[in-house]
Structures are given as structure tokens and as C-alpha cells.
Length: 250
Image 1 (cartoon, rainbow, N blue to C red):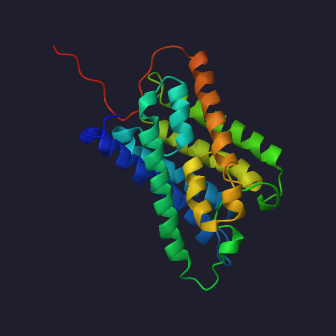
Image 2: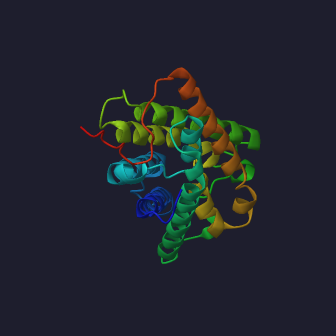
């Protein structure tokens, strides 16, 4: 990717903003609203918050960057032949920066409450003693691989050239909602290394020590999902880059 090209810079900035929103809204719902006395939104609400963050950003920036918001999605789309491999690194860096800024903003807000306790995890992902349901490393690893694999499978299908036009953001957002409904008790649901990195930097300690798993497992799952869908549907389909193909001259 040529970062001297303003269009490419716009794509990276869009990915940063989109990942900021996913992390701030999704993790924010968990840190601030999930257990709010009497009217907390709970697991269902947090799941929908993550899904809605993707739906809203897909409509907002999908035409600019393709709205990946997730290193595992970027790698998975590249593995499935739907994204240029040379653009992976700029997208991933932009996504991580956006997630870290979101975690910083969320932390600055959360510390304003006298009941805030960073020791509760700050929406960080974990396994073993730090899994909401005390699930083991192996259970968490398998869950993250499978959930991310299916997420990529759905993304590849929803953005395929023959899929119903205009409905991809809804399918992808609802998929992420469903993924969280299944995965929160297991690992607090990652399927997104950038989303995991932001909160882990502030939670520190165990969250940073376990962060490796929330990079390795989603990246493996994303690649498998992309390759599987490419094998299943070999017909050429659009690149998920946000760049419209050039119109042939008449």
C-alpha cells in the first residue's frame, strides 16, 4: 500500500475510526452498562452492542475501507483472495491504534466512577481463572478459532458479488452478536486481536500475559474461514477494500 496516496491514507484512517468505535462501544457496554444497578444490559446487551457497532460502521465506512475493523478479518479476506496481501500490515496497524485509543478514552471515562475497579478486567479477554466461566486454555483456543472461522465464512458470503445487495452489514453485525452470545462466557469473546489488545494494555498483568492467544487463535480461524469459503465458491467476487472498480470507458 502506497501511503503517499491520499485514498490509501483515508482507508487506514477509516479502519482506525471504525475499530475505535467497535472497541469503545462494545467494551464500553461491558465496562459501563452491563452490570449497572437494576437496569444493566447484561450479556445480551453487550452482544448487541458489539454487533451494532459493526452494522453502523459498515454503513458508514464500508465504501471507504471495506470496514474490516479486525486483523483476523483482514488476514482472512486476504487468505480468501478478497484483499491485497500487501495491504494487510497498514490495515492491522490502523486497527490496533484505533482500539488502543478507544481503550484509553474508555478508561478516562470509567475512572470517573467511584465504583470502577480495573481489577475486574476492563473487558479484557482471558482463559482459565480469567475466563468468565473458568474455561481452560484449550477450550478458549478452540472457541476462538471456530467462532472467528465462522465469522469470516459469513463475511465472505455476505460480501460476495451474488449476495443480496445492501444487506451485508446486517448479516455481519448479527453474526458478531451471535458470536458474543456464545463466546462471552468462554473468553469474554475476542475474535478480534485489536479489540483484545486495547483493553489488555490497561488491564495489564494477566491480560497481557494471555494476549498471545487472542492474536494466534483468531488469525488461524480467520485464515481457515477465508480459505474454506474460497474453496466452496470459486467464482470471482469483489475485493473488500472499499474501492469501487473502475468503470470501463464507453
